[in-house]
Length: 111
Image (cartoon, rainbow, N blue to C red; front, side, top):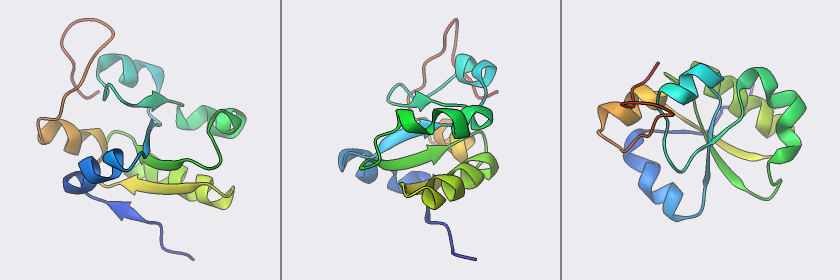
C-alpha cells in the first residue's frame, strides 16, 4: 500500500500560498456549521460522482472533521490521478489553530 501524503495545520499556509485547492469532504450540515472561506465543498458521499468538477492539474489539500474521511478521499483522488494531500486533524485542527471560519448562519464551529 502506498503511503498517502499528509500535512499538519502548520503547513497549510505554505500550500495555500502555492495555489493548493482546499477541498472539504464533510457533509452539507457540517459545511454549513463552519468551514474555511477558501474551501470548496464536495462531500465524500458525492466524490465519485462529482470528481470531474476538480481540475485534474490542481494540487488538492483535502480536509474533513478530524482527518479520517479526508484520508479516504485523498487516497481515492490519488488513485484517479489527482495530486492530493490529506490535512491531518482536519477542521478540528483548523479551528484549534484559530484559523478563520465562516458559517451559513450564526457563529462558525466544527460539527
